[in-house]
Length: 245
Image (cartoon, rainbow, N blue to C red; front, side):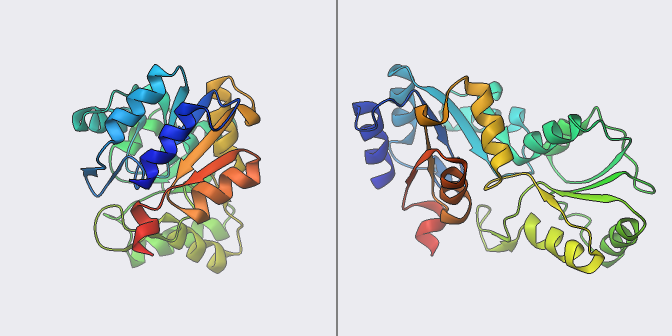
């Protein structure tokens, strides 16, 4: 497939000076639970070529641990330390701010990343929006709105409005955050791709300079735009959500 021909070019030296690769997961390595043919072998070839790898996902439902576990079950060889998810990046962003308390609106294993925060749904300093599909209803969203009007700050784990990685197209984190932002007048901080923050954070874990890294993704709006805005090279693969149009 086109995506793994691109990987072969990186390994083969077409991208001179490259010492590391930041790979998206959904739409690049796998999509909707199906691994792309050649993906496992290509990732291993990049490792064998001595490249530093990071796997950067806008998923909020996954923690680094759960994401690595799932990829390893699929046949990849990945360490949790090589993974950055939108939830882990948001937790790192907040940790630097030393918040008094947070209301983390999130389902799934991604909640693991916020275990060391004081959780408060009645008077939080920060409202943190992830994929909280089990509780996104009229009452919960109105409660969040009122807390924002009373002075809470708003952080969104991802700016993406739509998602098709689980099957049908669904509203994504950015849609819920934008609604609360517009209704309350409180400007949200968006952490996930294409935010420069998450690219800077990922690069810092690699110990490499911008001109030594290339980003591989399937989304123009997040992967490629984010990489270009941050000043690193990028490769667009025509799989995943790109192929869906």
